[in-house]
Every structure is written in structure tokens, then in C-alpha cells.
Length: 292
Image 1 (cartoon, rainbow, N blue to C red):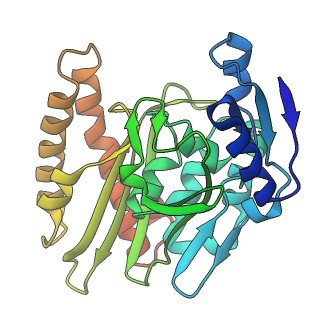
Image 2: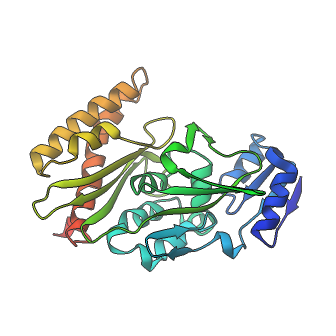
């Protein structure tokens, strides 16, 4: 196995073109190294992008916030651009593994591994994120919700890499909430998680809602039926209860035949409600609804 440390994105794309599917991108390596040790992956080359500044960092443009794929979870947690209305993304990054894993693991790896339990993917889905994907001599954009094809399989050709994640900067009356249920408090892999993006008017009517779930399907996904139900409704206890009931039915049907179907369909209601309330209170300018 050849270890390669390119000095530029252009060089990365040259190597990807040369090796195609026989080369793997490595940044944090928190998942890939384990797979190699288990014999699940055996690439001819490892292309290390961990020190490429053009693939790292979080930037604000006129309309978008852009995140480099080699940005670590710790960098997301510490980024002041993600304060206030985007707290749900920081909460998701903060819920990943241990401090050591957060210091090494990257958001790009979280996406490209296409794991059902990827913590930062539901918030990025709820933000309607766009992925910028590049290969030698080509560049394209794809909506994150269209990226996942199956468990562990994403929309990347052998000569392509993810070079940017971007989403629109939220307005004052918009907010992103997140909540995760794990098996234990420390180092918890998601048993299930929800992210909710809300826009409400002065009457608490839902103008925009995007809901994404993790660990209750083959990959993280948008919950379109619940979004459709909530759009245009006044948010109150009755609305939330009816949305929870609908969600329970949708999740149970999706997982029908699995031993976890009943547990996850019931547990999903509480996790969804907490993510929704987190988003609602951010829309109202309250950072920690549990204390108010």
C-alpha cells in the first residue's frame, strides 16, 4: 500500500485519476484505518488530505457557509460562525465519540462513509446542504439528500472526491435543532438522532421545516411526510403530538420486520420532539430551552 501526501488539491485529483477506485482518501482515518485492519478495505494507495488548507476550515460567503471536508468535529464545535441559530450542527459534532475522535474525525469522512449513524449528516440534511464534488477536469454539485444510495454507498465516482459542503446562512427567525439518543453517555454511536430546521413567523406558524433522521434507515434521510404535515401549521402541543403520532407510524413501517421496529418507532417521538423544541427556541433567540 502506497502512502501519498499531496501538496495541493490539484495533486490529489491527479492521484485519484491515476488510481481511480484503488485509492482511498484519508483525513482523520477514524473509520478507514479500522476497516483496513479488519481487512474490509485494501486500497493500493492512501491519499492523505489532512494538511491541505484548501480542504479545511469554515468560511462565510455572501449567502452561504462553506465547510471543507477535512474539517474536524472539534473545529466545528469551536467555530463562532456556527453559534446561535446553527447550534444544532455544533451539538451534533460535540456528540461524536471522544475528544480524541473529535480531534481527528472529519465531516467529509462522516458524509462519504455513508453510515446510517453519522452524527453530523442529519443536521446537514436539515440545512439542505449541497456537496461540491471534483475529479480531474470536472466539477459538479449534488444535494446531500441525493448523495446516499445504500448503506455505506455514496454518489462518488472512483476518480472523484468531496471538496466542499455548503448551506445557506440562516435568517433571524430560523433555527437548527438536534438531539441524539445513544446507547451510553460516552462514546455513543447513535441509536437514533433527529435534526430539525425551522422557520416561523410572528404567529408561530411554520413557514419552512426540514426534518432529518439518523440510524433509522439504510442511511440518514429527510422525513418528508412529517415535513409536509407541519408546513403551514401553528406550532403548539397539539400539532407536535399529531406529528409525533405520524412519525411513529412512518418509522414503524420503514423498520417493519426488524426487532428494533417497535422500540425505535416509539423512541423516535421523544427524540424528534426535543430536536424540534431546540429549533423553535433558537428561532426565538433562546439558546438553551431546558433552562427557560
